[in-house]
Amino acid sequence: TPHPGRQKDEQIRKNIKFFLLSSEMRSVTDTYSRIIETLYEFSGRVRIISEVLGVSTQQVYSAARAYCFGLKWITKGQVGHALLLSESGEQEICVYIRKMMAINNAPGSDKIREMIDEQRHIEQKMAIERAYAMGMYSLGDNFDKFIEPASDSYVYGLLSKNNLTLAQPSRLTTDRSDAGTQSNIQYYFKETYT
Image (cartoon, rainbow, N blue to C red; front, side, top):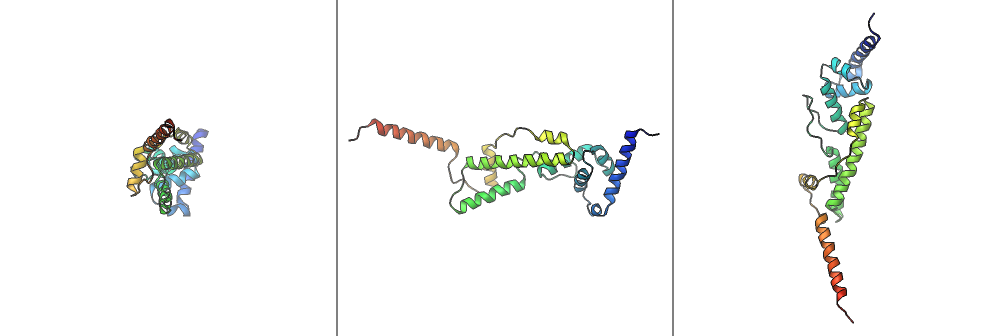
């Protein structure tokens, strides 16, 4: 008699094949979508899913990682460098900036950086939830890491890419301005005016 673990794997393999032949899955032809749908239906069964779909386990992980972060998945199973934000997250921020500009209240670089960081935390939580829902616990745990704040170059790159400009000075300019004002106040009180 076959080993109980092998029997169970064989049954799962049959169930996956049956699932892929079901009416709702027949219309799904791209590999990426088939991987994701199968992961949701048979969570955590990466090896068996890869065997049935004829892809490597690395491609399954790669597709899952791309899906979790809303990135585009390249058919060869590679994902480019992780973005700070998904395209939709960037667009949400740009729409907000444009709305603020329309009422003459454009945010400065610090506010934009804060918005980027907030959106990144939201996307990180969603990525972890998606990974866990697909039974990809190690992938979800890998996502649960400290996120570095957005750099100045990322903020300015986002603005440039979307034809946006800053209305308020950057943090450094603001600090210099505050120091100048403080100096003027100190100078004012040195003189006696009666």
